Image (cartoon, rainbow, N blue to C red):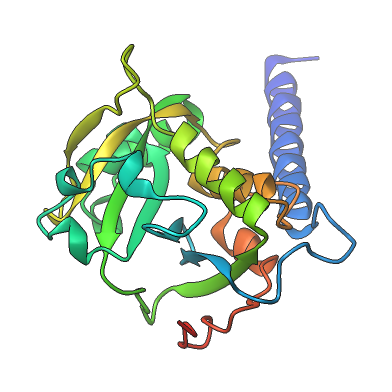
Amino acid sequence: MNDRAVWQRVGLYGMCLGLGTVALLTIAALTPRQWYASSQQADCKFRVYVSGDLMHTNFFVPVRTEAFDWSQHLDLAAIGKQAPADYRYLQFGWGDRIFYVETPSWEHVSFASAVRSLVLQNPAALFVKGQTTLPHSPNEALRCVSLSEGNYVKLMHFLKASFQTDQQGNVQRISSGQDGDSSFYNATGYYSLLRTCNSWTADGLRTADVNTPVWGGLAPAVLRQLKDTCGCGEGGSRE
């Protein structure tokens, strides 16, 4: 077999491997982990919110409920410019630290940074922002997820455990967000193609016994499995 034939065969095998991987990930993204009824609660007493576009998902959680008070675990005054007393919700997102901190918007994404984020294992960061109201962006879907008290607390502890801490147990703030009203913190874990920002969101939901796709790497796949039990997806938060 000559060299040309060898390289043609290598190229064919590589293409088949790539297409097979894409096919498997697509099937995994469309397949739910739970085929039985969701454990989401119908009374909406303990609610969290998941927002997302085609690329990225975020959690929005109340600053305080009778089950968990974020002011006891996070310095709210250090997050942004607004008075922490005005915050009703905290927004949490997880992602590639360099990409997160240095890229102000999707329009500024370079091909090299995108490839690096997907191919390598990259240290992660948490994006945290205080919100006075729930955002309703026309470019993002918003889902309300109602949880039992026990599952709500599990999710709060998942978010808390996502902060990387020093030897004294203090969170490690990196910098202010590009809008000046948010902050980045060192996070646990590493970002890669197999563990994206949306995989982290799916992991949190799974901790709270909420249905997620087998592979939660894509934002639409995560949102697709969420039942909007509290009615905020159509613009009403029912607060």
